[in-house]
Amino acid sequence: VHKCGMTFEDGRDLLLNNLDFLKTYDGIYCQQDKVALGILSLIEKYNVKVPQDLKIVGHDNLELIDYFYPKLTTVKENFEVITLEALKYLIDIIEEKEEEKVQSVFESIIIKRETT
Image (cartoon, rainbow, N blue to C red; front, side, top):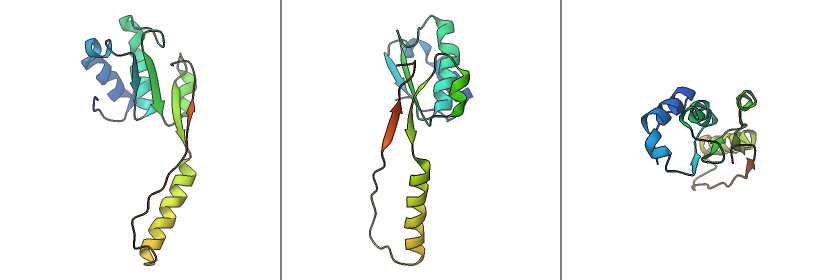
């Protein structure tokens, strides 16, 4: 696990500061597509082929993916459903209808593209 910020530049910095270590991996999962795209923007300059040598998966399914090659595999969430559930829970707390902790499960979709 490597911790970093959640921007494109953070992904580039993560790659540049950990290149030798990252070359020992066969795959990377990033908490944000922006971080994954930052890594993807530089990785092949260091003789690492995606997906042959390193597989990369992001999270968010940003439209920005369409401007990069190879196309990033990503995890897509239904943020509308998640937001509505959170708002419902918040309203219940405000109206004092909710006293117990609530646990919700949301379905994610893996959108397989060219980086895996």
